[in-house]
Image (cartoon, rainbow, N blue to C red; front, side, top):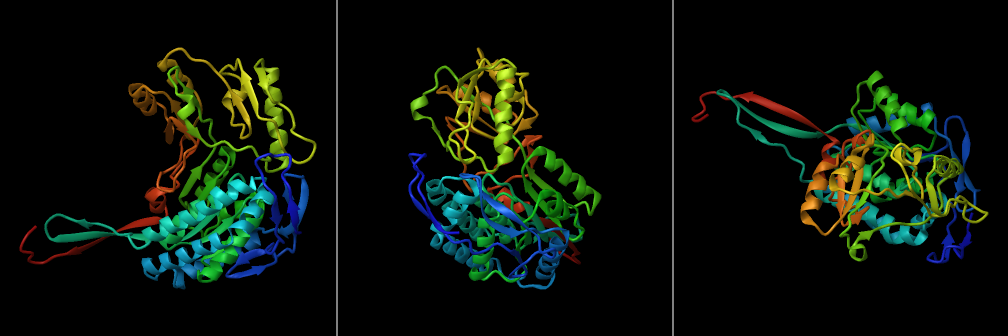
Length: 455
């Protein structure tokens, strides 16, 4: 499929060229291959609701082949054995190739993920290159410590790659999520089996192609399209995968933990749902507050219908619909920006993650009440605080149980800033050196010392 898209219904979106779809198969052991079953499924354009192409449908047998390739590459291949600087050099080349193909990659996430082309070109794709370069720079700085042990012994620690990593990524940020996990895992010397969301596989396959061009050895990075209940479940329960990293719903996160425990007790890191409050105090300077909010298509019909059902919940339970609340246009999966007022804490729209353009407004009188309401949730992913009072900012940011607090800003992300949840928003951290450590094992080495002149 090729052609042009004119985002005339979205004033900020420009005309961009839809590229031909080059990669639709599975990427295993350095080659694009059909699924064992030969099955395929449709990749949908959420801006129109129409099929773009068909992609190979990976299942347990395909995951087995990908894991076998990744295991061979880890146990016997050069990637974990080459120097960190050499891994970093290849990752830098990978980043260069991403920037060279920014137009095509941005178009793929736009047509397959419903994202704004301009946003992908300016933010998501360059962000992937920055992520790779950040961890490429860290690849040769992985080291342990020297231990001062009791009399007669000396010791030190090694930080070793954890092994074969299963990465299951969501549809909301297909590029960012791919490299949020691949960047630190590759820098650590791990090999990977990546399952992109079934809604957004196209850019992941393109990245697999670029990885090979950059010089990643065969088997280091494998991409298997497929569904959560088949390919995702096979990753979670696989006896030869050493770690699973997942971003998605809390419900699926529980299933992954259960499968990991029931198989080989592999460690997991989970970045799950959130209900992230934005606390705006009376002295807030709204004009200088920074945030990033983008109106785009919902990724698929299921999510589109789910958000419309939440809007109906809000109206039915007594919240006041201030604006929006309806489908936007007649084509594709767009919903009007929706704001509810008079929202109570026990309402469905106040308790559950909606994951769409729906905002609930609630009033508070005191700082203590604001903190209590912000913590009255099973989630703990993020929160924002808007105030000019430094004491209020410090008190509130330390009192809210969430993994990141944005002060006088919102959704401010950076590759050097760890990101992850408290409570049912999961555990483990993405970004920063904390993410790198999740793909490393600590090994202690102890040896005897005879007749040491000092202890």
